[in-house]
Length: 178
Image (cartoon, rainbow, N blue to C red):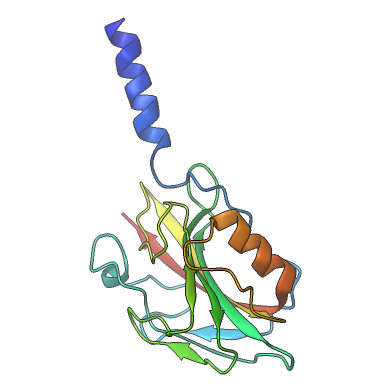
């Protein structure tokens, strides 16, 4: 019995780690014509530890250009498609004003809302892979209109709203390894 309990405890520990979200990436067919940049890292480059679980865990600065006419709101999704149990969503920001062109490090525009991430928190959850190198996608979505969802909205509901209202998207990808 002791061996079974130990094995069961190990299974619970492993499955409780990063990757429990298995979130579906929204708007994969929306045109990818938004350019996303950061002063902290380049596309395809490493994300500085400051923005991860091994550092301060603050959100990095992001900027974007190329929003299409008719953009009524913006959304940001940060996710890790390499998580052991499927895509892990680290951050969901909803209903940024369409005139917003950037966010500062560790900041959130006053009118924006944060949905729950895969960890169940309505906040930025810095990259923290259990092992190996993971890709972290910082995706900006142009929405036809605001979602109207409140802070703390469940992840699936927020991603469905982004999916249904997206008219364009753009992505910046960073790498992090532990």
